[in-house]
Structure formats: C-alpha cells, structure tokens
Length: 260
Image 1: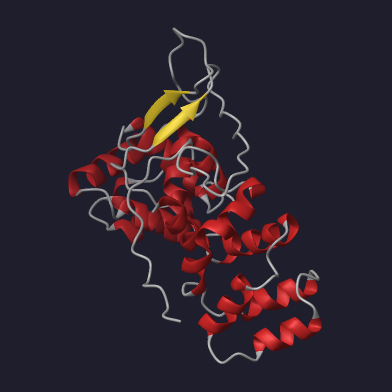
Image 2 (image 1 turned 30 degrees about the vertical axis):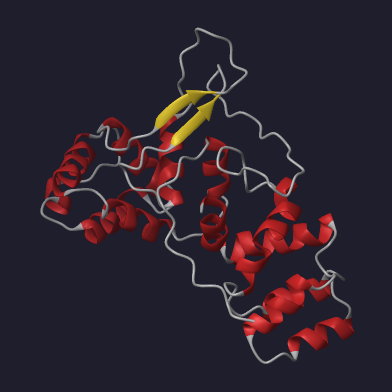
C-alpha cells in the first residue's frame, strides 16, 4: 500500500470560539507561543506593541531601556521576568487588544434574537486563544457568540460526513466520525505509534495477542494500517480513546485534517 502524501501546512481558518477555547487545553510552552506570535507582527506593529506595553497602567511595569530596540525573543523574556510566565499571555493579550493589533470577526449564533449586537464577553480571552492557536494577527478568524457574549454550545452530529469548520471539532462527539473520515490519511501521518498501541492495550481496546501482532510489524505505516483497517476502532469508546490521544500528542495533525 502506498503511503498517503504528507499533509500540507494548515491554511488560515475561520474558527468558532468554541474551537479556540479547546485549543487552550493543549499543553504548549506559552513563552514559545508568544515569541512565534510576535514574530508575525510587522515592524510597525511590533513597535506599536512595545509602545502600548510601555504605556500599560498598573504595576509591575517594564522600562523603556528594557524593551526599546530589542527583538521579539528578548521582549518576551523581559515580560516573563517582569510579569511572570503565569501572567505572560494575559498581559500580552491586553496590550494587543489596546493596540488593536489582532483582527477577528464576531458573528451572532444562528438562534440569537434579531437586533442584538455581536460582541464577545471577554475580548482579551479571545485574543489569548488566537495566540495559543497559532493564528497570525491578521488572520481574522470568525468568533461565534450568543446575544449575551457567551460561546454557543456545539450541536451534536452523528454522521460520518460531519462539517467541522463551524462547530466544535475537539468534542469527542465527533470521534467516530473523525476516525471514519480520515482513516486513510491517518495511516501515513502518525509517527511512532507504539505509545498509542501501549495505551490501547492498557485500555483493553487491544488484546495482548492483537497488540503483539501489530507491534511486530516492521514500519509505522504498517502498524497504523493494521490498527485502522482492522476491527479495533469500531466502537465509540475505542474511538474516544484514540481521538483523545491524537489531540494530546499530535494536535496539529488533528487540526490540519479538520481544516483541509
């Protein structure tokens, strides 16, 4: 069997706020995330960010000599030292919001009453999610909100042909549909499946015999093919375990599949 071609880099996506909030659950280094995000600013935008950071009210504060003329990594390190890593994204999102450097479109949920204006209940929280999700400042994602500014609940879909783009794909409601729809693409794009096999045996999805049989195959593609084309991931609980593993260990693979 020929392995499917490698996945391309994901495009800029229109995403509902529920999807952004799920992305916050991923275990990522927030220092690296912010450095990567600030590198996407133009020189003028970065200068505006620095000026707004210096104008920020309240203590603690950064000084001009700490950040003026510094690059993105140095500025982030200063922010960590001044505000702490725990507060890093809060401060960055506040500054980005005040400087109006992050674009996003707000739309009301379908069942919101007519005549109500659309606005998220916490724009800083929305910007934090956009930073964590790896979008660019100009990507202009769509944020769906209820009339009170809260996020709409995702609607369950049972079909294997689920349209993920404007729902909440991170919900395990979609685990069986995900496995069914992307089975062939997953075969060639999950590196080192041995930890996954270990988990599936531990969770009793694989018997000891099936585990040993798959583990003995010579390549990762063969192992994934045997797992995905066999009878092992046919139930909702088994798909939940598989999907949870992918979201934790290979989140960008999941996002790439969902958005292409």
